[in-house]
Length: 222
Image (cartoon, rainbow, N blue to C red):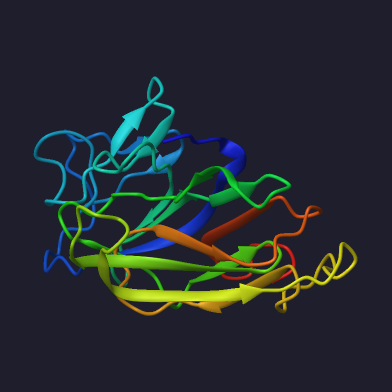
């Protein structure tokens, strides 16, 4: 999967309740990584975390990541009260087209950070943002049928919005109300990050579409 730091935005993951009263790491466990505190139930190294809450300290102990993720999911902050939370960087999905309207490249933004089924993307803290012209983009989560075939796979959750542009002057900087940009709340219970685009009447002045889940209020124009 192609990734770039320019295509990473902030989102908040909520960890499942642990039922454990310990809120600090033991003296034998690494307490921080890259300036980020690692409180229990998160932890680095064997015996320092609950199942699903492992953190890996990468890049010569300078960057905490979720090790079970597809690619690299950087951790920016970890909290334990009132329940475990992780603020992470998620990729932006994109699709680009040529002048004939044919797809020239794409990335669905898929991230598998939930192999132990402990995380949910917070619906109260995050939202879905779509950028582009004449496009409908939506996120999907929890595949339930035909999971080996992306064309017919079925999911528990779908959430998306539509953007429209009449000409290159339609979209306005600082506005995200359906013209060149739209945003929508996501449903509770989303457990992974996968986007899909559907477009019509491609515009040469808008060769690419983008979709991402981001912390509410952190994207300019929303």
